[in-house]
Image (cartoon, rainbow, N blue to C red; front, side, top):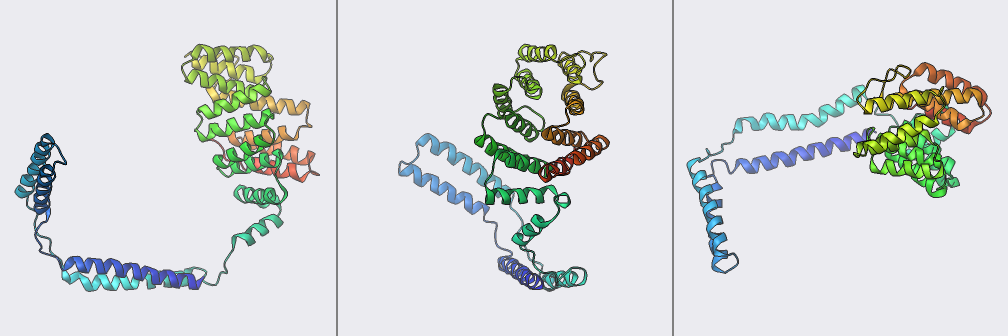
Amino acid sequence: MIAFWVVAGVLSAACAGVILSSAARAATRAGAADPTTELYRRQLREIDDLADRGLIPETERTTTHAEAARRLLAATDNQAQAWTADTSLRKPVLVVAALTPLLALGCYIAVGSPGLPDQPFKSRVAAWRAAEPATLTPPEMAVVLQELIKERGGDPEAYGYLAQAEMASDNPSGAARALRRAIELDPNRADLWEGLGEVLLVEAQGDVSPQAERAFLEALKHDPKLVNARFHVGRARIAAGQRDVGLADWRALVAELPTGDPRRAAVQSAIASAEGQAAPAAGPALGGQLAAVQGMVASLAARLEDNPDDEEGWVRLVRSYAVLGDQANRDAALAKARTKYAANPDVLKALDLAAKTEPMR
C-alpha cells in the first residue's frame, strides 16, 4: 500500500508541475493586446473570401457580414484591460504545490494503514463463499450467487435468488437482468413475469412503465388470477388516459376477491382514490398503491397461516414486510420461517436476503 501512495504523490506533483508550467507560459504573454477584435476582422475577411469564390450566396454574405461587423464594433467599444501577471505569488504557489503531496502522504502514514496488504477481488470472493451466508451483505451475496451460476450453470430458481440479492443491494437493473435470464429459461412462469414487473416498477420509481405493463400482461397470460399484476395493469390504463377501462379492471378484481380478503378493501380504496372520493368505511385509511400493497401482504400472511408449506410465500412475506418498513412483523415472520426451514440452507439464504431489503421511501 505504501508504494501506491508514493506513486500517487509523485503523480500529483507531476500534475502540479504541468499546471504551473502552463501558468508560467501564460504569464510570459501578460500585457498582450486583446485578440478579440483581430478575430472578428479575420472572420470578415473569410466571409468575403468565401463569397468571392461562390461558396456562399450573396444574401448570406450580407447577413453574416453584418453580424460579424456588429460583434467587431461591440468588441471595439468594450476593450478589455490587458491581463497582468502577479509574479510575487510564484514562490508561495510553488511551495504549496511541492508540499501538498508530501503532506498527504504524511497524513496517511500517521492515521492510515500503510502496512495493510492488498485485497484482490478473487480472494474476497473466496472468503465470502466460505462465510456463513447470514453474515454477508446483499452485494456480497449477489457476487457469490453470480460466481455459483458461472460455475454450475443457472436455473430459474438460481436467477430468482440472484434477483432478490440484487434488489436487496438496491440494484433493480441487476435484478431485472437476472429475472429476464430466468424467464429465458422458463418463459411460462407467471411469478417470474410478475416479479419482473415489480422490479421495473422500482426502476420507474413507482410508475407503471410500458415495460412493466408488458411484464404484468405476460404474467396474466400464464395466470389470469394474479392480483398484483391485475392491479398494476389497471393503474397503467388509468395513467394512460383509459380511466374507465382501468376502473372496470379494478371493479372486476374486487368482485372476484372474497369479502374477508384484505386486498378487496384495499382495491376499493384505490378505486375511491382514483375517482376522487373518500375511501369506503370498511377499507383501510390509506388509499392508492400503498393501501393495496398492505392489503396484499396481510392476505399473504393469512394464507401462510393456513398453508405454511410455501417456501416462496415466506420469502415474499419477509421481503414485503421489509419493503413496508414493518420490522416487527418482518422479524416475526423471519423467525417462523427460519424455524420451519432450518434444514434447507437455500431457503434460509433467500429469507436472509429478503430481510435485508431496504424499505421503500
